[in-house]
Image 1 (cartoon, rainbow, N blue to C red):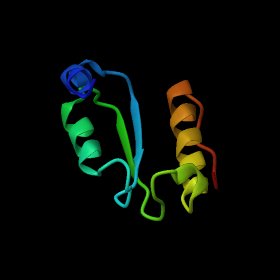
Image 2 (cartoon, rainbow, N blue to C red; image 1 turned 90 degrees about the vertical axis):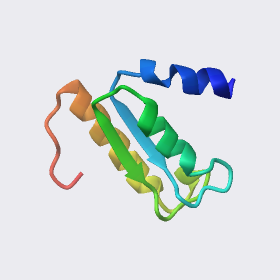
Image 3 (tube, helix red, strand yellow; image 1 turned 120 degrees about the vertical axis):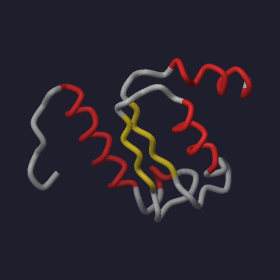
Image 4 (spheres, rainbow, N blue to C red; image 1 turned 135 degrees about the vertical axis):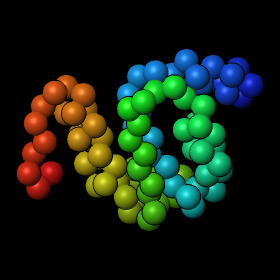
Length: 85
């Protein structure tokens, strides 16, 4: 399926929130670079998780992940940014 997925990446035009770890032992960091280079979306939020590995939601960056997801969804929903969030 990898060939089909990479072939179809230019069809991605929706806003994208990409959270990835340069220390991931399961998914090589070059996959994030490939993804970003091939998508067509002009609204991309790229978050590097410096303190986590593959299961980042259970690692040191869990709070950062939650914060960035909430910010992303609120922005897309047109809600104003919250102070201290």
